Structure formats: C-alpha cells, structure tokens
Length: 450
Image (cartoon, rainbow, N blue to C red; front, side):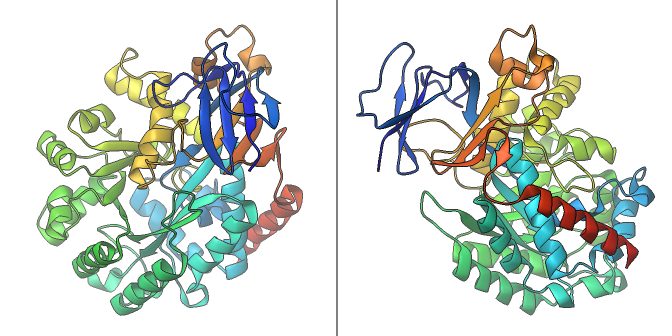
C-alpha cells in the first residue's frame, strides 16, 4: 500500500486536460494523485522514481491482433498479394498450428507489444482445428506469464468452401461447439473488476467465413453474458462484393440484419463505408479499430477515421495480424496512423495527440475499459509507457510528445502495468526473451516445413 511518486517527467500525455507535469502518485496499482507543474504531492510519499528524462503516456492499447500469425511473418508466397488470396494461401498453414506453437506465438506477440509501450492487447483468434480446441486457454496462460492485460476474443469460422465461404472445410466448427465453448470461456476467465487482467469477447471471424446464424446467435449470447462483440468488416472491396453476392446486402446492412449494429460491437478495419453507412455506425456508437500498416500492406484502403468520429463512432488502433501488419509495435502503428490519415484529411487535422488518443483513449473505449484504462487520471489503473529521447533520431527535437511519433520512437524504456515494472531499462522483466525468441524461430520453421 506504499505511495510511489513518478516524479517530474520531461513531458506527459494524459489523454485528457488534467495537469500531471509534476508527476503521478500511485498506490496499490492505481493512480491516487496527479501532481501539477512545479508542485509537490499532497499524499505522503514512501518512494519516488525520477522521470525527468522520460516522456510518459498511458499504457498503449492494441484493439485488434492475431497473435498466432507471428509464426508466418514476411512469408514469400504472400508478400505481394491482397487479402483474399493471402488468406487462401495461409489458411492451410495456420490449420497445422500446435498448442506449443500457439503458446510461443502468443508470448512473442505480447512481448513485442509490451516492449513498444502496450499494456493491454486484444487478440482475435478464430482457428480451432482438432488439435487446438483449447486455444483461448493456452493464450490465457501465455498472457499471465508476461503480466499483460488481454482481451481474448473467442473467434469462429463456420462457413467453409462447400457452403460458399473462404476457409477450407477442416478449419471450421459447428455452431453448437462454438457457442458452448464461448460460454465456457466467459464463465471461466472473464473478469469484471476495474483491475481485470483478462477479458473475453465473442468474435465470429468475418462475413466470408461464418454463417448469418452464428452471427445472430453470437450477438444474443454476448448480450446474455454481457460481453463485447468483435469481427472484421468492410476491409476490402472483395468483402463488400462477397456480401452483396452471398447475402444480397452491403456490409452495414448485413451487420444490422444479424443484430450487431450497437455499442457492444467493435469492428476491425472499417474502410469501405459510404456516407449513409458512416452515419448509421455513428448513431449506433459502433467502434472501429484502425489498422494502418495492414491496410497499406494488403492495399485494402484508408479508414475514414474523422468521418466516423464526427458522426459519433469510436475509433481505436490495432497492429492487426503479424503476417499482414508484420510488426507488433503499437507506437509505430500510431505513427503510421498519423501519416496515413494525413493523406486523407490533411496535416492540420491529424495531430500526434490525435494518433496517441486512438492508441489509448479510443482503444480503451472499444474494449469497454474506458473507465479505468487509457488515460492518466485519478482512480485509473497505473499502466504507463515511458520513453527516452536520447537516441540520435531525437537529437534536435523540441516538442517531446510530437517527437515520439515524428521522430519514430519504437521502444519503451520502461513499462508499468498495475503498478508493476514489466519492462525496466528496456528489458522485459517477466520472461527470458532470448530463450523465447530461439524457441519461436524453431517453431516458425517447423510450421512452414510441415
């Protein structure tokens, strides 16, 4: 219960208008006081940490990923193809995943994220071949070994090639199995407290890989269990055309037809919406996770972030799968979001602070944790990223917050989660990273050789 003062940072981005230039006082994993500029805490201080050479942000929040894909990064057969052929080539490879490979892949993804300053990450796992039916249980164990907060989504694929879907038949599951396992996972792992380390959501993969019935049943189950809903939507023109041909409607009409057009839902990508659809999404308070690196890699398009926000939708940020986003680095993702969105909306409207907001406040809203994560404020969780600006790339920079993105910060000096140091002096404290990387590289070679 000791009070710990993170003292006098070089600069601090709080995600709000509160003054914390004198630092932050934490106790028992929570923020208990913000110290204004040139002042001392009102609280009794037991220990302090000198942050005078550090820029502090709330712990970054990644609201869309596929952890298992760290095993198939930069694989030559899919380097230069768009989404649908990319998926068709990779599905058979991913279907061979073993439990051990998934555990390693999850640890690598989370390690890379936390080293970039990420403290809370959502994963969309939708592959449950016969040897991997307990995939989410494996991921819970992997996350706990690192001390990371996670939102693990019980994904699903139920529409195989024989029924007009994209996935091969051996990668899909029956609806009853999907729903029973979804309920089991929520009951077993989903935490509802302000300091929750594990959340579960329901996440049918995409319109081209699940039936309308599983979408409808998942929405009903999510409401019954009071958990969030997630899926891919409007990522590519191919997907839009698929929905029109398969279901006779565009993606947002499809979303409404299956009971998903509500504030429980957050969508990955959200690129190909027209003005009327954007208005409907905003009115329903649907969330959109922007994934700029992936959208550029697969040439999918540019998410209309400001249009969505101006109509009431919530926008967050995600690195997407590590075989399309390839690097699981959230501070670099924020930089890429800023630059990509400037092409669409201009330099004046897309600021470094807005991009950081997507990676903190916005993503916390998407994941239903906005009351205690994503900002630096009293009663919020003590989750922070600390960045040093002593590398040559920052030499001559003036505004520290802008420098994080404009000069290309790519690794946090320290990371704190729930008041505990998870990264200290650039090193991961909770696992042996060299050993993990060695085992992960071997697993990646074995998967592609199988």
